[in-house]
Amino acid sequence: MRIPIVMDNYSPHLSTKVDQRVGEWAMTNNVELAYVPTNASWLNRIECQFTALRYFALDGTDHPSHDEPNSMTRHYVALR
Image (cartoon, rainbow, N blue to C red):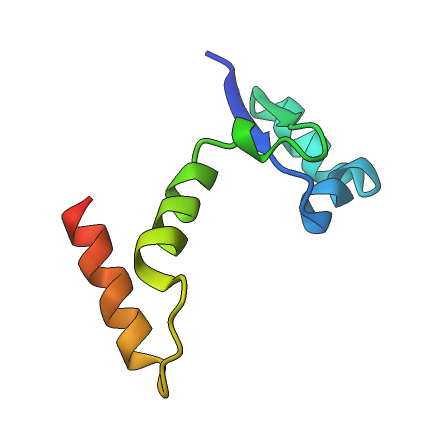
């Protein structure tokens, strides 16, 4: 069974085109590396989750410490 791994255009992911070790590993282990097109974040299934998190838990906030947004994020994830 072939295992597909969808990768965005984050620069370390693109290094697989320059450094062949990852590509060789993928071929040996029956893994297919698939890159999404530039500016196609809607193809990445996790992006909509981050957008909702930012909208409901983080937009318009100005907290004096990291504890408050961390708490808001945990609360949002627990509700989802």
